[in-house]
Image 1 (cartoon, rainbow, N blue to C red):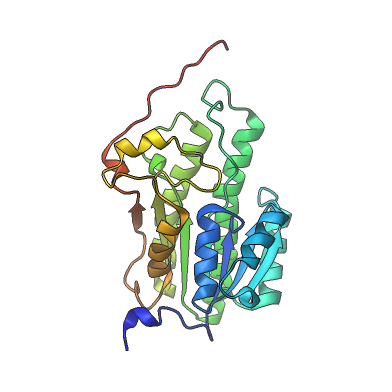
Image 2: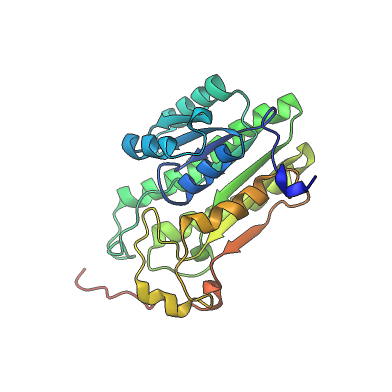
Length: 262
């Protein structure tokens, strides 16, 4: 039997995906239930998460949850709901991120916007991962965690709140992978390029900078996410950052922003 035919063990594995209402998080969550994995679809928007669940290959395996992960109490509520609905979470995907606005450059971004971006991406990601890891370590069970970072964790994006949050996540992946490897918990990053989904509205002209000649779609990320999450396919992969960008990272296409009056 082909290894790729059975990348997961649905009898023993369950997943939690944040940002599952749209974009990349939605595509990954839907792909997981398509593999038979019970999955919590967590998102801040009730309508989008309900639609994501309904459109899933196996909606009966999907558990919706709605809340703002910038709030620590909401994070704890999500953990409690996941435990109640699907039991021990073995696979965690952190894709949630507040929307980006091109106007929020270094001279314009508000303190509230800065704090929310870091709270959802970095602080919630760390808190959720650590609590899920505690349960796995106590049960002597392996796990696989995946953080959605960005090409701009290493290159400027004219959005310092976003780039610094993603840079922090990139290092967090390495820290957690090094610490938890001894317990069989793998932690990796998926690094998307210009993906026309979720909160990113891509200029079609950007395709000329992409060696593969097109913008990406959320569905381009899901197969790689499943491969990295699978303890059967990627058992010896941890602390890695897997770039899925059509070759866009071979260039740096952003110019410095126009600052205007400040």
